[in-house]
Length: 297
Image 1 (tube, rainbow, N blue to C red):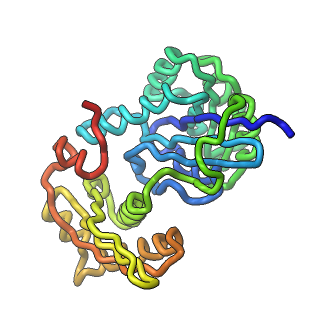
Image 2 (cartoon, rainbow, N blue to C red; image 1 turned 60 degrees about the vertical axis):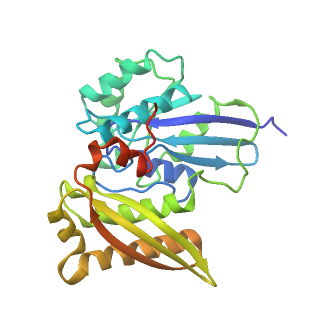
């Protein structure tokens, strides 16, 4: 039998390129929330892939962008911090024929690290195959990648090839986590993220970015898990939209979130939601930390 291998891999890129969808595909189940809105991921999310002869610990990171709030600064700092702790980096991009300024800055940062970088071109289902070569050439002119793997995380295309490539870059090592563990996120945190995901789908424009979830009670009674959570927003007008006419929006969000939480916990869930206003919380260090976004001192 071959020697057991293990390693840490960070997934980085600009917002909305499909990092969380890729993490979920690699692990084989939903670990990170997803939406079509940028900056969905706020914290680094750990996903653990365990097989008979290897274990890869992935870190899904917030999209690297030019922040305009203290929360945004935290997100970018978290993403960049994950690079230095990795054995390999997956640099995820969309199939465009030019390199954007954000991608140029990411590659500039990566040049300062002595870490193997694999270019992953996502969303290849959205382009003609004959255009792929020129896209690859454009990026390889800018950086010496260990490999280039075209994929469609949405369609599961190329995922096996990506895993095979990653196995070349992890070394013999121990199993860091139990083989039945797929994430280090506490159930309470995952439940909060699932509520936020439903809000991201339900709400338009700026409102979702100003929403934070606080689960202040989670208790099991017989065969039912009771969860009570506050949804914080930044304006009274946003609160009215989140609640909706006659409470319709809040009820719909709660119903969809409850279904996902029940699947996660494999138990019936009673979910109670309240909406509260915290003005400009994304620029308040105390509230940012209180909502689970730890700041370095």
